[in-house]
Length: 627
Image (cartoon, rainbow, N blue to C red; front, side, top):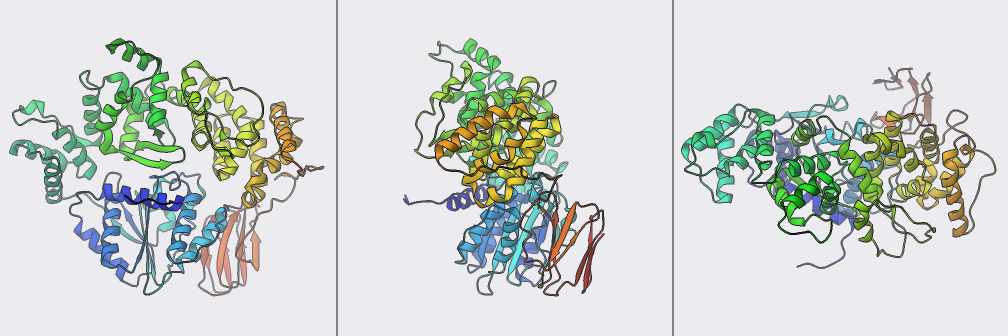
């Protein structure tokens, strides 16, 4: 056993390595695709390569396999891989790019502090790619681009260069070809051949020390052939594991298509002899309602708080439970049946469990959310609402939180904490998300959450200020709240200072929101608490005049590129900048977000022209026009 200190980057790399090993276990076939990618890695094509195909076609397994094979073949190459969605850091564009920059820099011996500004990180990412050398080329693999939230700054893919440095190769994957990647090299992942499926089935059966009768094997492969998807083959194999050699044909059931085979899995688990309809339906619904997955404790907590689940358990239990708490074994048995289709991801405060395949997630929502798609979100909102915003606070204010009886055991488990400010990132990620998707009173309480300046400060200190903007946008999409709009404007205005000095985020937010309390009464109490906390900490700066809002004055943010040429679109929605090296970036004027990035490859730009629509770009040696 190896002992030592592991950094956050070490843990991130370990999580993706473990996921890759799991995906490539018993990998079979796909020789033509592997050869095509291997050829790309060795040739002089400086475009990124995109692997695309429908969900369930095995793209992640191919990415894991080719990364392992190329690393073994080219031992001098630096191999960096990320599977988007596998960890919280790889689920957000900013943290994904920061992690990539950090690892590439570390592997090439160029270690430097990385800011929290997305535009700066995107520029740094492209600079990091230049570290690749002829004797130490860089092979970068990024899987599942379509898993990025459409509202994420990275979803535009403007951070990906259209022309790579000579010693760098990037392999990407997505369900479809994104508009931003229309000119990259592509490889399509088509159906798995029958021979490849037969070889994979043989390997899986040998690993489980199982044998199928010839007619059983023939039936499974015949059903697979009508689908052609590796995911269908895996699901059918899980059903075939339950078959006995003496079973009749009707007992060895399979169903057509992915939806059919997934329903067969859920039907089998829902039998009274297995887990029952209530536990399966409610347990899977809560897992599907989560934002990034749930920890094992959270799953047991919310199932325990569910009166229907608890009453059924008590009715079937052969003993009187000493307290209201589901035994871990109840969930462990269900998890064991689903383990092949779930993924465990490292997360702050624990390891979260979620669906790996989007098709299972979508089927759960279709099947178990019928008639009430808000109940799961409401229960999770109550669960996370009972948690403290801070796991530790150096300047705790007096006062006691009111926690519902059903959730009090969770609060009691959080008594000890390290002596410093530690935000509860599980609550920060999930609570506003669940409130926005819940109905009735929980959605109404969302305004109070986003007006709680202590909650806002916690997210900023955790580096989640862009996620906080997403929380506000999501809330404004479901409720018209002037308070949330004011908070959103204050956060956007404070972004440059929060990015530069997160420790001063409470002061920055207070100075911007204090002028809104006369109009929005709901802000008065949180602002009073914030002022008391600031005074308790020591000297601080309080503005004596109002900071201009977006509509009343300019919004400052660094444009980067050491720009020598700028142009603002006629509508005032975008600004383009360029420098003497021919690097060009287009920013959304309201937030500073980079919506397009390109280069003229060391050709200086004499002028830039932006049209009102700003939906495309064309180049010339002396001028650039956005059309």
